[in-house]
Length: 439
Image (cartoon, rainbow, N blue to C red; front, side):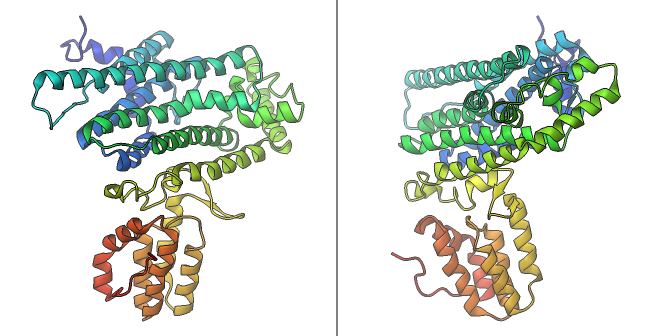
C-alpha cells in the first residue's frame, strides 16, 4: 500500500507531474483572492478558510494537468506541459489522484457547534455538513467535465458552437470552479455563525461567479491571440473571436489547414498562424470579444452591488470598502476611452496626490479621482487628505469626505471609512463636527 509517508518515496514519484506544475509554474492566486474577498461576507473561520483555499488550489492545478493532456498542449505558464516530461499515462493518473486528494483535504474541515454540548448531536451535524460538501463536490465535478467535454467534442468533430452554447460551456468549465468555493463558504457559514444568510445575496454572488467565469475565459481568448502563441488556434479550439468570425462573417474555413497539418514545416506553421490572427483581427473578432467582455463587466456590477448591502450585514462592513467587482476583475472600463485595473487606479492616484504641490493641482486630481464609478480605497483617500494638508487647504480636505459620502453604498460604509481614517484625521487636524452623511 502506498501512502504519503512511504519510506521509498513512491508517492512523491507518482504525483511528480502535479508537483512539477505546482512548483515550477506560478499562477496569480486569483481564485484564493476571490475566496478571501467573499469570506468578508461569509465569515468562515481562518482555519477552515485555509482548508478551502488549499482544496480549490489542488483542484485547479489537477484540472490543468488533465486539460493540457486533452488539448495536447506544449506550454503551460511559460514551461513545458507536465505530460511532455512525465508522459501522458502518469500525468493523467496524477491528475485524477489529486482530485481525490482535494476531496480528502475538504474533509479536513472542522465542524463545531459551540452552542451544543451533546456529542452525539455534534457528530450528526458534522455528518450532515460533510455530506453536503461531498454532494457539492460531486455536482461541480460533473459540471466541470461536461463543460470540458463540450469543448473537446466541438474541436474533434469541427462543430462550431454558437455564442450562447459557448457561454454555457464557459459557465460549466470555468465559472463552476469559482462557484464551488462560494457553495462551500455558504455551507460552512450557515453552520458556523448561525445567521440567516439572505438567499437573494447568495444568488447574486453566484451570478457574479458565472459572469466572472465568462470574463475570465474571454480575456484568455483575447490574450491567447494577441500576446501569446495562439495555442487555442493551433489546437483547433473555438474561442469567442473565432466563433464570431465563423458565425457572423461566414468564415467557415478559418481553422482549416491548421498547424497540425504542417508539423514538419515551422515556416508554414508560423505563416499560417500570423495570417489567421490577422484575418480574425480584420474581421472584428478580437474587437467583438473585447466589447463582450466590457458588456459583461457592466452586467456584473449590479449583480454584486444591488443586493450585497452593508445595512443587511452591518458586522461585515468591510465588504465594500473597495469595489468588490473592481478588485477582482483584471480589466475594467472606467470611461469611454480609458481602461485600467483597480490596482493601477489606486497606484496612479496615490502617486498623483503625492506629486500635487499646489491647490489647483490637488483639486484637479481630486475631481478626476471621484469621477469614476467606484469608491476610492482608504489608501487613496489618505493620500488626498495629506495633499490637502500640504497645500494648507482645509476646506478641500472636508470636501474629500463630502465626496466620499456620495460614493459609498450607505451610512455604515461611510462610518467604516471614518473609522479607518481616524488616525490620519487626528494627525492632520481634520475635525468633522457636523454629520456629513444624510439621514
